[in-house]
Image 1 (cartoon, one colour):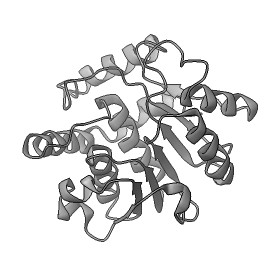
Image 2: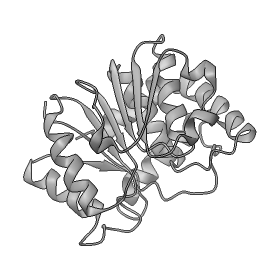
Image 3: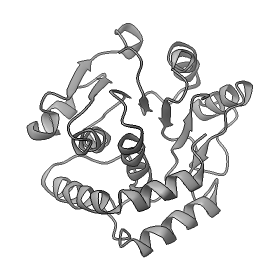
Image 4: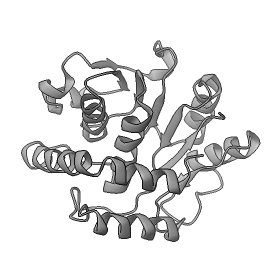
Length: 229
């Protein structure tokens, strides 16, 4: 899993860079109709994971209008421009909203069903935020998660809007897969893990990172884990 203490250490290490990234993302959101799906903690943990692990290949399944995409691209840019993001989505809305300077030569967008596409080799970070169905989750836990290298980091959105996911849902499938493989997870969802949420919110206050970037939602339902090391 991604231990909370590790996330806290990353917040402290990259506090200045994260503060600048948050300011840039806030300005971007004011300029473009992106309709964010990621809440601030989810976006920040994703950014910090890429900064710390420095993956050469990042995979995003589901981009909508590109809010998560811009966070991932900004992390790659802040890693001295190293790495490439491969995004799959059924629509190309993100192509019209992601700034060219962020996309540059570090973004590969594929419009279409990821299940019929060619996945990149050896992704070091994966973000899944697409069809929120048990059927789709059964596909990506098998076709994608099973082939991840040890140490790769994964984020799955919309798992913990409540204390636990519905019994027959995407989140239930993902949690069952994690249990069967003996892999722990982290979430900043206030419904599922209020202690983790409160510790991170308190830390952000101390680091002067408390002002919201995307203030419309605070559920933070994303789940994070790392493939077995």
